[in-house]
Length: 381
Image (cartoon, rainbow, N blue to C red):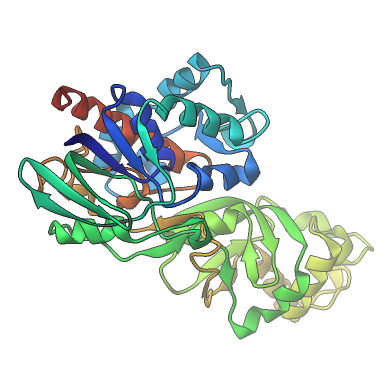
């Protein structure tokens, strides 16, 4: 009997394997290599963590998230990387990236986890309780394990082998799995905003998007399918349905336009192509600010509160993460073990914990893996 079977060779699964005693675990990965999603994250440089990590940056049970992250926070993660020769670089918005390539963090995780058996191109089909443990059924064999850790991730990036096996295992163990939707993903548009598709390739810096009470700041990118960019991706995490409000000109003072003889499209700090299109959509003539009628000036204020109801999102194929998952209140935050099934554990994205852009989701993966490893070690003899 194998002490531990880890389902998934992504960030959380590899970190867990690296922290466990040598030859105590089998990692089962459906892809031909481990860390496939890590390699494409952060534009290929992998945004590993952030200088400031708190539960406010996550959607999910705040107490649960805080309990887990506090046991292995961003400083502990930075130290772990540095001890292995990888000094992460802090960039804008306090994000930490690999200096050159995501291959650097994947290489470390691969090396650290190589002390375990890693099975590639093998899919877990099911697990069933067995005497003193579990029977893990794959597409190639049956494996008897004392402990099983589900680190299978979410549904995003199906091209990289995303699977719903983790959710099925949870449901078979009587866990509640909340609605699964794409997150950190672009928005598709209603007919009223189809004009934005014609702006594909243009971008606006530092917009502010309000979704309910949440405010998401960052760049906005116009794409062929709709709108994207950091501000939009973060907004998608909190959006369910209904309208969002985009402020294209945060902190802009309209009085600065008064008295100028130049047209407003020249004076507003937005790309000319973008502002002309927005003015046309709001039915505002491009002339001097002083020449605008009162109702036209009122409509101009719409640039700071542009109401838009997304038609939907770009879907799981473009989503960076999956929103929803295994209910956090059914997992012990000090062990990551199921409260319903002894010796069954859940870590990483499969749980109903989703972070904003900025390294928060990888921090969650590594933190939850650390907590789980700490709980497993005494059970591995």
